[in-house]
Image (tube, rainbow, N blue to C red):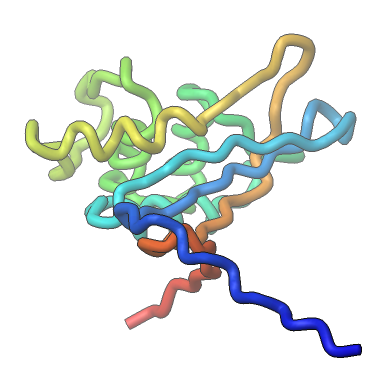
Amino acid sequence: MIEIVKKKKRRRETKPYYLLTYDYMIGDANGNTCETVNVSKDNPYLERYYTLLNSLQATKGTWGIVFDEHDFYKFFNEKQITEDDYVFLMRMMFPEYEDEGEIESNFDVPKENEDYSYEFQRGVKGDVEYSFLVFEGLDLHYIDSYGIKNKTKIIKK
C-alpha cells in the first residue's frame, strides 16, 4: 500500500528574526537551564555581542562565567576584552550601568538604537531562585519568514 505524505501547509509569513539562546549551568553542576530571546534581524550589535560573549573564558580564581557587573571588569583586567568591548558589553547587558569614568571608551548607544540593546538584556541571568548561574555559551538561529529555524555561523572577514 502506498501512502501519500502531504507537505505541510506553509505558515503565514512573519517578520524574520534571530533566536538567541543563553545556555547556563545551575550552581556547581546542579543542572542546566537556558534563556531564549528574539533579536531583530537588523540589530547592529548582534554579531559583536555573540562573538564577544562566546570568546570569554573563566577568569583566574574562578571556574566559570557569572553574569555580574563586578565580574565583567575582570575580563578587561585579564585582557580578554578591550576597553570598548567592556563598555559595549556592560551597556548591552546591564540597563543600569553608568560609566563612572574608570574606563575610556568611544562606544555609545545612540538613542535610536537603545531598543536593540534591550533585546539582549532579557536573556542575561546571574542567578535563579535557589542558586547562581554559570554562563556556558550562546546559540544563534535564524527564523525565516515561514517560521523555519535555521542554524547560523559567524564568518570572520
